[in-house]
Length: 82
Image (cartoon, rainbow, N blue to C red; front, side, top):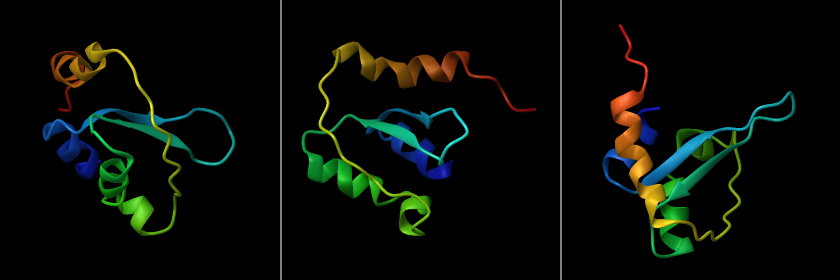
């Protein structure tokens, strides 16, 4: 989770999370980057990728510019740890 937090704080990670279900562990990262190569470099900082526990598949995606605001909104409404 530290890596995800760091990437979000740097403004590179817009959205991340696991997929539900009983199958293999899978998840998604949506990055705010210009190239697939930059996304690959960021994904390669994930400890699970580095350990070989997860494999990445990079797919270019274009979405609303509003998506980059998710990180800021998350900070205001996320559950606080006590």
